[in-house]
Amino acid sequence: MKKFSTVLTILIVCLLAVSIYKYKNPPAQESITFFPIDPKVNFIKTETILSPLNKPTNFILWTIHSTLDQKAYLRQDAGLLFANGRLTGQLSDWKQNTAALIQDDQIATEKSTLLQAITFHHAELHEKGDQIFSSQAMSADQLYVVHSNPFKTFRVPSNKNEEQWKQQLDAETERMLQLSWNNGIRYFSIPLKNYEVLPFSQFHERAKTTLPGFSKPETARIVGNLWEGLYKNYILGIKKADGTIITPLGSTIPLILLAKDKTHLLVLTETGKGEPILLRQIIEEAD
Image (tube, rainbow, N blue to C red; front, top):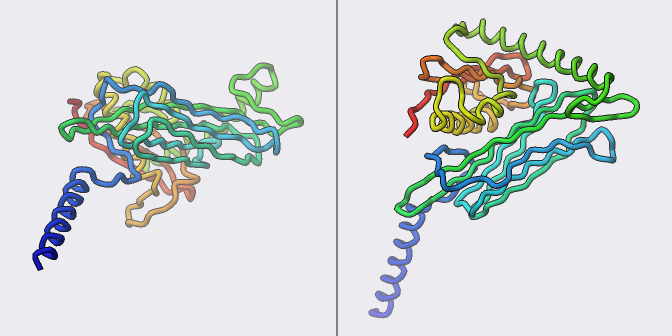
């Protein structure tokens, strides 16, 4: 009986130890959560690449690769691919206790297309004293795909024919997006004079330094919180006003509206069925 009691005591202690460990080290989940940026940790490589495959010729290889300068508790990369202004593909991966992630997909194109890919690279860092920090970066690429004879692709036009294709695809995409965004602005009665307007396709470049009216730490927090919100409310599915969740595929490139009073931002998009969607996010003060 004494031996049984001893074994039972050891078992209880082990169970308590496991419970305490799980409490302090909860299992990672597939999500993006912003934490204060750790300036000592950096990405040494981040890339989003769109490149043609030799066979079949109408396929494009979409590759996302990132490497942190150390292993992280959690590494995540989330990428969005737009074709002529509408979401056509998503890539998302996460792993624990690693520094690098790489993923790719083959995209079939049926017509001449402007492809635009944007990726958020994120690391969650657990440090001593139960402190949690982040490291983050963005990368992007775009490619013009022309279904002519012969089939060709280019990033920057190198001749008159390619320049004409660029102008045509840019104009078609811009016309569709402007119509969609204007419909959404009217539908939600958004006072544009109160906002700085940034198409999401330009957000990567604009956020490299600082966003209009914001410091570098404030910009980092806005970028991290924006992608956290996009992941939960866009990438994993768009939640409509009636509570139903629909796929984001086919939706337009989001329009980011930064309030000039620095209190919030809006994310405006349109579903594949033409329904305007508006997300609102409070802008928190940087630490």
